Image 1 (tube, rainbow, N blue to C red):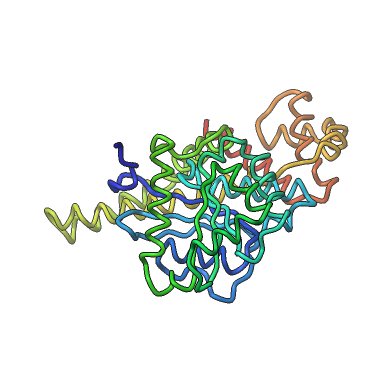
Image 2 (cartoon, helix red, strand yellow):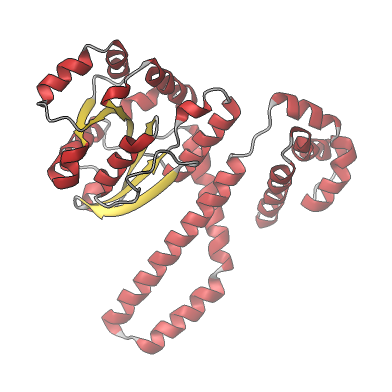
Length: 335
């Protein structure tokens, strides 16, 4: 059977982790990465975060999202959270984990899953596994009986192809075999998906923009790269030089990638509501000349369209709107 690319060291094993936040979600991330990237007392994060490590003979990346239940009332904010998680996990996660604590299985968990599929599409469920975190001393068989009696849990795993895992947080802190068992289940799911990571048009758009931004950043660092190369060539020769050049180039690629992801997540994270847009277009003609000067556009029609973005100040997003325009201007100048 074909092995996933990340098991041969050719790719990063990216896990996208949704949930209601709380300690269990962060404990799970720590256990997968085999390092304490989150403090034991942490209960929530404001933005999606990605952490990396090498463990279980692979390169690992776990992207944790904030507590999605806090964003249910605001579709605009929820969409922003999802867009940032896409940038953090681009070009796509091999596995999506939906995690919650054993004592917190409720209808809200089902609603969160519905929010995820509404944005990412139903096909993301093929890459998803439900993880029930706990610290019980009971046997898994007894716990399985308990959770399967919960109607909301049954609905969750039915949507996820009956894939679930009982994860003992307490044992995982002492024994890496507990985490390895979860990794093995995830590997099986990846093989069932043809060893492909999950992607859709949001991921494809984000990755294309990120790569474009990476190339632009690299162009701006050519002088720095050349200077560093000459410095290394003066200090090392042969295999030593090759090793140092590889380390330097790898560090530069990682830095460029992270800078590009941050930039694009800011661009994609800025959106206008339909009401904001309609009101702003009315101001577009007045702002057309200004935006045309900034972006090098000609014609009031284009000016009005750009004015719609700048007009986002009506909705209280002045700095974000102007940032969008200047970002667009920069991208136009790169072409």
